[in-house]
Image 1 (tube, helix red, strand yellow):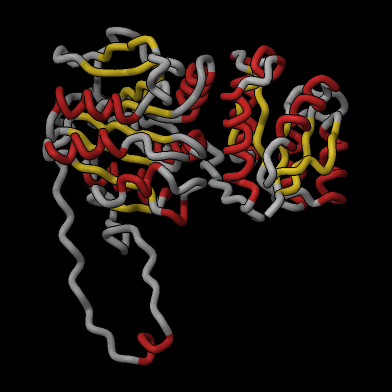
Image 2 (cartoon, rainbow, N blue to C red; image 1 turned 180 degrees about the horizontal axis):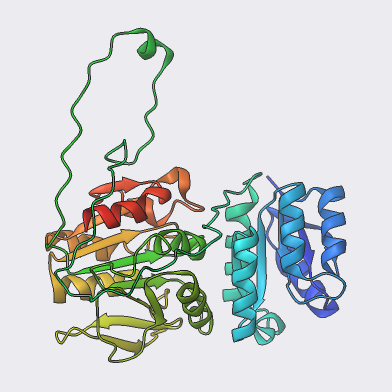
Length: 380
């Protein structure tokens, strides 16, 4: 099947180069080019593309406004082609919240020299989402949780229990018509493993769809959350700093981009810096290492999970959210060997069910995104 692509960019150079690169793949065909957000809205309506590559800084109407308008009229997967600057990261996060499904860093040098890495990334991303006629948009809460009066946080502090969700495993219950007409035998739910007092650190890994999913989870945590939290989100340099600053404004917990030597403290969320790797030392702090070109993901969930298994053993809760690929699967296996607990996001609530699928066989729980935050409060 050949998927129709609409390219949106105000630069004639990028228009030509992106069209040439995209058309090199036999299953992708550029059917239109727009030079601003208003043209993108009009062409999205008339051409009905399967996917859109969207720039953000354009005359007349910017890319974020165009994303909102297109998603309101006829939802279609939109991939942002974003500058790698700090400002580009901030605007890209706005676009993801508006409904874009993913982003690709925009680097003039890579486009100019016809980079094989860029070509592979662009083709892979467009093909992944092109088949989704209606992309799964995850809406994060519009308003931040207002923190209560600042409590004294200690490693033994707990929060009041919340009502348990109706499904202990978070999986949809499906029944056939024959089952509904027959008498059902009720099976007691599998008892949940108690985590209170046993888990020392929460580590969450995510990739495609992760920024919005992480916002959904972290906004539900109170300032008195009893554990340190480490986030491994696949993002390039600059993006993680902007992402951390945004979450810190939205969340009751404190959020920051991790720095060498940062201590792990309850109620503090550290986000692994883009382009680097995050591991732990035995003093209860983090180490930030340069990215190694031999490792595909920088930061890598596998590397952080493996370090946590070595330092914290079974005292880890590892959560794997939406994402393309299988990063986290090997690290989750090492954690399980140490007796740690693994949760995965369920397929129905994922933007891309790649990383959670890769750890599904190891997961103690498979949960819808909306249940993960409440369960963290209840179980920890």
